[in-house]
Image 1 (cartoon, rainbow, N blue to C red):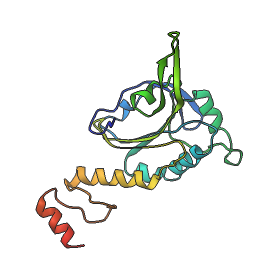
Image 2 (cartoon, rainbow, N blue to C red; image 1 turned 90 degrees about the vertical axis):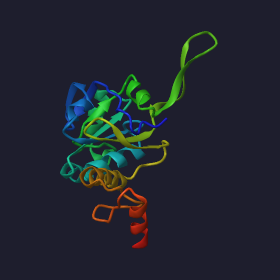
Image 3 (tube, one colour; image 1 turned 30 degrees about the horizontal axis):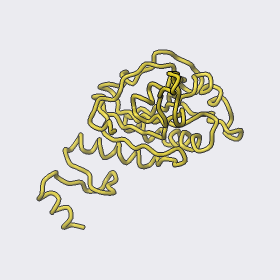
Image 4 (tube, one colour; image 1 turned 90 degrees about the horizontal axis):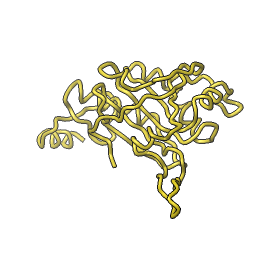
Length: 209
């Protein structure tokens, strides 16, 4: 199910900040009224596709910051696993140098609430709780506005890495709409012409192509 147009699920969890500090009680609510948020899930620490995405976000962190956007990662690993990975050099499979918050979802409840958990809990015939599927998160990404509303989401299967540039494009489109009230057509990029959300606006835009 889509969370677009709905309030982003609230949580408080342990987190690693600045790549070296474990903290408790982290929540996206701290950004309400202040920043847009890119909140993304990845399956596991110390894996293969995941570090390429995390490093890609870090390499573009200045682009997000100048747009007043907070980037926050999350997986079902513990805060200790996050910290160990963050202290491991890139050449050894680590993500040292990453500074944005990485949330621990050891209970998997955050992934469940954002509907990206790659499996589900059930009961066997003996009445015992079992988990069916992969007990990790899909590659979910959520763009949350300053009011805490999800405005964009994309969920990839485990083998499929995401585009950080597309996340930036979505931020630009949302901020353009918020500032000018214009909607952004297909393949729109910052600086391109947008259009009014009317039949005439669409006709005028298409007539110029």
